[in-house]
Image (cartoon, rainbow, N blue to C red; front, side, top):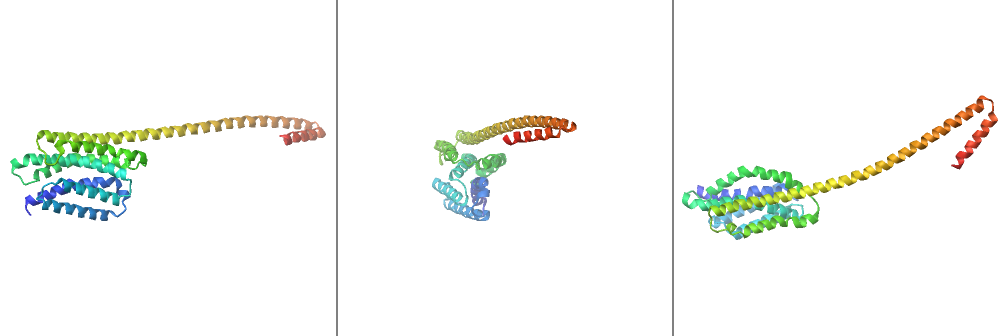
Length: 288
């Protein structure tokens, strides 16, 4: 195979595989099937996409792109045991990142390839690899530290609406003429793609951080309420303990007095009075 045929295949792999791994990463512990089965199914879909790409003379067809997006989303819904809204949220965030990298690379490819005389998709591949080198580790860290913990949030009321934020951002981006497949490409459209994609990702990051901050604040508030409740219980126990100590001191004082009286009676040989005193004290105790 020549470089003209290998380069488009490499492009399809670079434009899909790294992003699919990120899409499944937050849900690796919630797969319904073994990872090898998921990888096999995904490999079959990817191979089919490469075949169709080859049959269309390596021309990007919007309908085919959308078809495989839907197939990948359907596969995720089948093999991942998690909320639909969570999966949609993660999927749209990944698509925004994918749109940024792939969109910039293919725009630069279309802008420079006719004049450069290089094999098709070679420039796009090089730019994708460069962008991965600059951003993939950062985005993976974002997925690992933020998204993976964020999807463990179980409030369905939040998830029912929160996925719409990246969905609306993505819809606004795609409605921009610079992102339409086949539109004219120049330096301005490339910069629009770059800044729009970066801004969209920044909005998603701010959204996740904001919700995490709200959750943390709510958690601290609940802990504060629990602490205040425990303090009230401890204060009540302390008051009861103090009262018991006062009663104990009073009893010890009374007993000491009783012993002194009995001791005086017994030392002076007044046993009858001592017995009478004991009977009286016994009667007082029985009344309490």
